[in-house]
Length: 344
Ligand SMILES: [Zn+2]
Image (cartoon, rainbow, N blue to C red):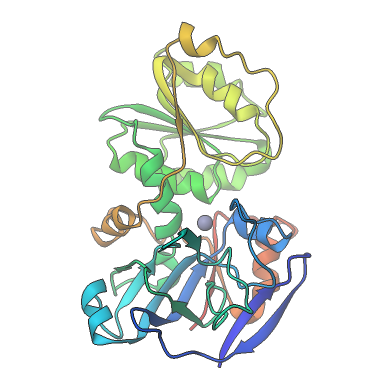
């Protein structure tokens, strides 16, 4: 049996024991070690899944999954380049004949084994899965950062050596983007946030940011101008979720001819955007939308990621309620840059 957290899709959840299946030919079974939590898990809890087909409920969420291969047949082991006992990162996109599906987001617990999300002790890896071997010398909860980093390494595509990079939003995506921007050659990294983000802004310096700006108490344009001798940012990456005003701020903070990457999901349409900014200041807009698990895992295995600083807080499965409260910023007097569940 595998203990699992099941979301009902109506802001309720329950713990269930689910039988562990034998792997299908071409698939495997993973013993989950740790799974990171993410803003999209909050949406999932509320019944919204960010896929065009809207997800399925009840279901097991969790897509930032690190575990050990528990059962795999020899042909699949050879094809995937892993053996039983190996520790791997799971790419959440599962390629199928009809397109793709996402572990932890759009499988119902009533389909097949039901074990298709990371908030459970086991995960059934279906044929078409992609897994990448992870280093053994670090705790699994630290390694779950591979997933936000898999996105962040693609968001920094416009970053060139010695660029000034501004990252808006010091959440777990912003933190991963600091690391990715540095690996891409950024010389100066400035992170912006609000007064409520004080703890996270301070933490951003530990993760590798050079400067932080609290936009509620300082004029961000003035401050970035001052920090860059008037040059402004070569690249602004908007990793902030929620309020769309960060998009307009990105257009202010980028230099003429610079690049803006729009990544964080907003909760409403944006007002006050002037498209003239794009031709008159020759700004290039990029989508923050990719996923490169292999590149993220390579950075971690090469020791280029401060996984300890990026860990945040971890909880055992039985304290899921506390983990979720901290994730949704409902724990009085406490904040966290990232949260993971430990499943072993
Ligand atoms: Zn995520």
